[in-house]
Image (cartoon, rainbow, N blue to C red; front, side, top):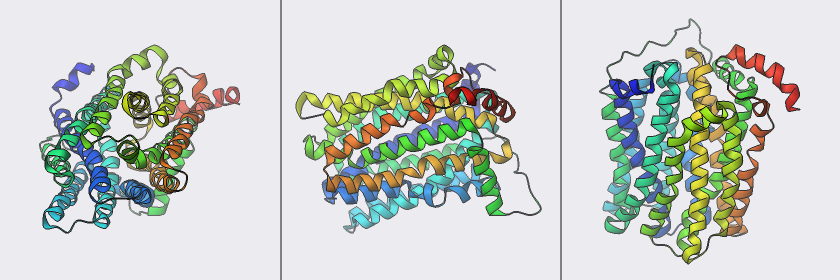
Length: 425
């Protein structure tokens, strides 16, 4: 099937449209909530670290059992419940602000509970796509969905900055709640009947979790990808916890200017979505996974070099290069792991990956807040930039370095590992 056919795939269009609106709302929230914490609630570096950690703590706390639960139920109804719950949680922020009772504790609690819903939505979402579009369309489907995310990353921060200045940060969070609500309404329009999950006579949660982990950890390519992504996310979360603080207090930027910095930086992600196919065709899907990181991640060292005036462009370039590399990398590796995984294990595979690669994020956010208060914000950004650049070594010194294209099945992966592992050593 051609990539053009997905434009005519009605159900995929519903998923795509809903996800685009949801991503836009998410990106508005990702800008507005830190600005709310810094500018209105006067958060300290440690409190910003707590807020960043709360956003992703659920992947560490319930990520593994979530995968087993997702494999026991239909994915679309679960995604709907998660969207409605996230909408209600985010809408509570402007309501509390208008009532004059909003505090940092509520903001952290909302971030934590929204993260719980996001765990279930994301695991179900990545497990749902193969049955919706077919495995031969995964690269095209993931590229289109990634493009929506990056377009939202470009436009939403600037809109968020303007909204914060016009109506206040708490009111701007309203867009995030409405985004999740819109996502649910489009999911309701999907007509395809999702097949019922395989039923087993006896279920053992611990055994099911272990089966998903074994599939990931036992696969040498997935193992290297998970280690690289987890390390990168750890150090990027250190950066994320302090970046708004750095731009606002060290560089003296206003809310609107910070939104503009994020919007321009996100153009790198758009470029990545548009060129991800070129990278795979030119260099091969396996080679792209380490090559694009080798080229782009070291440019993150520009971020702590940024200063007031024109030197702020260094932060933009560093962030844009990271966004570009992340999109190209994710399209390749997400499509690969969806393609080789059996349907019955998709939820647990995705949950295991998310546990390993997103579970590092709350730890990174918390450490970023602690280091920011101890050694300074700019110094912590240096630690983050160096660690992010070094994370590519996991895939650079793996069997992927000696491959051009990724195997398309678990059996082919095992055969590849047997022939390639000695060369990697």
